[in-house]
Length: 224
Image (cartoon, rainbow, N blue to C red):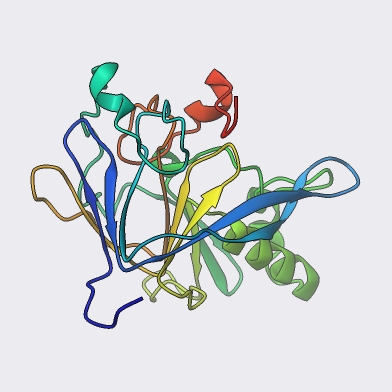
């Protein structure tokens, strides 16, 4: 990428995401022996220019890139998500030495918060146990949407991994934006920067531009 290119995502009105300066990669979910999501697997880089357009309507024949099908299908990409969500919106779960924040409005049903044996809500109650705490943190950090986050005290800063500014295309799923890339709405508003956030690319989300898990409901696929 050219150093003078600002890394940014612009949501185009009823159109694609106009991306500048961000690396683009494929990623897919790794399942464990029980068939539960357990980790992420990189699918490698996707060739692209310094600026490129990612499909938002879900109908492009050149996914993940836009091919302007949104025009012919008269795609309605109206954004309904709050640009700056209220700090009181997430539910707080307090454990010993760890506080988990849960913002359900960002959920995409990725499944990393639940295993065949336990889930993050049970583990936060066992945070005093080193193994339970480590597993809880692992599961929270795998959540791509930013629904789940943790901090060490009730009023302390969130603890986040340091990600590169990059965009990952989840196979048959949303766009995983990492590292706090600026997202500008079609009306010029700037969405709250987040270290982890997922954007809809199936066209069906009711919380645009964010993903709400509708891609699974409608059977969205990268390749028909």
